[in-house]
Amino acid sequence: MLKGRLGLDEARIPQKSRNGLIYVERCALSIDNGSLILHFTEKGETLELPYQRLNAILLGPGSSITHDAVRHCSGHGTCLAFVGTDGTRLYTAPPLFARDSTLARQQATWWASETTRMMVAKRMYAKRFGETPRTTSLDSLRGMEAARIKRSYEIIAGQAGIIWRGRHFDRANPEGDDAPNQAINHAVTAVEACVAIAVQATGTLPPLGFLHEDSAKSWVLDLCDLYRTTVTVPIAFSCVRQQRDRPGETLDRLCRRAVSRHVRDKDFIDTVITDIKELLA
Image (cartoon, rainbow, N blue to C red; front, side, top):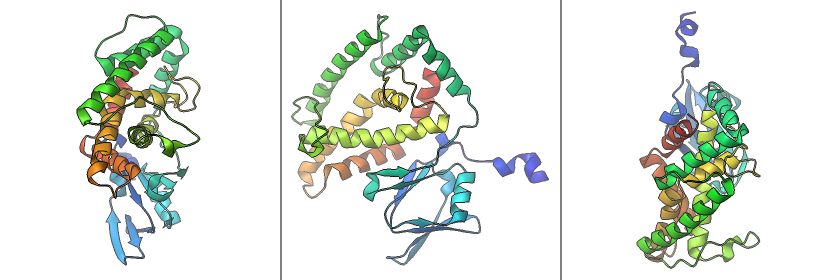
């Protein structure tokens, strides 16, 4: 009775205060005395994991998990996602639900009106570039943004000491792009996954974007653009430079590890959650 009266049965660490995500493979996950135990069968090692402090656990090839472990993770809001080697494919993941729908309802309200939709779009522009644009057209705002981004790429490339020939991406042959473009693609994928965690943690609605429109994850893409010139592209170009000194390393591995370090060291998911609240205030 006291447990329920005190609310301890539903107590959990807020998503914004957690430590991001981890990736495991060839690992068996189970519960022992309320703790999540990782059994690495090939190495014969066992690790106790404080899963209550994680946003998500990525289960790679060769991983298995008991029903009891799933129940415990679900009870504490720790997402379990089944992925491919090194997290390059996402197969399934249960949703993370926020405690209430306040932000989702506010987002829907702002999105439903052209006036308030433009207001939020300008807020995003101001957060990126430090000034509020004088325009009443979303198309015009997109054009202004594209021009600023194009110039930003050139500046960041110069700072990183790499050659930049412009942004291009061949979906039919993604590996055919030059190294800087490949690195951006890898970094974008990693950053997008982190932003998606923040979107789910806040309970906001992925399809309701203010600049992006057609995608089912338009809101995620809107937020990713906030960090393109401060996180994504600098990390990508830095990894291109690093690969020159480490020819044995692949760009995708360098980019994923670099984004992971940024998420851990800079509390990136916390930043995204804070930005979401500010944009929808």
